[in-house]
Amino acid sequence: MSLYPEARFLTSANAVSQFVPDSGAEVAVAGRSNAGKSSAINVIVNRRQFARTSKIPGRTQLVNFFSLRDGERLVDLPGYGFARVSDKKRRHWGGLLSEYFRVRESLRGLIMVVDIRRQLTEYDRRMMEFAEIVELPIHILLTKADKLKRGQAATAALEVKKELGGRATVQQFSALKRDGEDEAREVLERFLQT
Image (cartoon, rainbow, N blue to C red):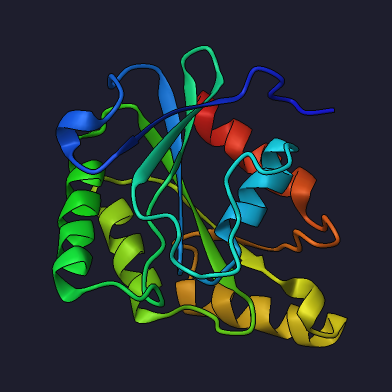
């Protein structure tokens, strides 16, 4: 059963003026377009098709606000890096995300979804910079861990932890096998309560 039985979609925003009221607490989820962000959200919230998944990377093109409980939200940020969009759209996203991190008083943490086989990209590092500027805690979900052998996955996670040097917490995650879901949910809850 879901910890969030009343979870529901609130709205999509393409401009700061369209964001939901800035009260309560929210946690943002960001990731490269093909890292499995929507699948990870669905597993953490324990609701099928809560965040819509697609075979085509880059379907999340707006800032999507979801209510988890009264006064607590999860925010699905546009996928970055792989999506086939124009340079103009990419610049718009960059500005929108920068503003999102700058203006949201209710933002409590960032969960970054990173394909364990690709490790951190320049886009991931840039997203972390947005969060660090406003002193947000960051948690990295190394998704698709089921695609690697156990030893390879452990080595990949260790390499990411080493690169970050304590700037973020890191865990392995598999939406397919639901590995790491409890840990990820605990992080979401901890962020919401800070």
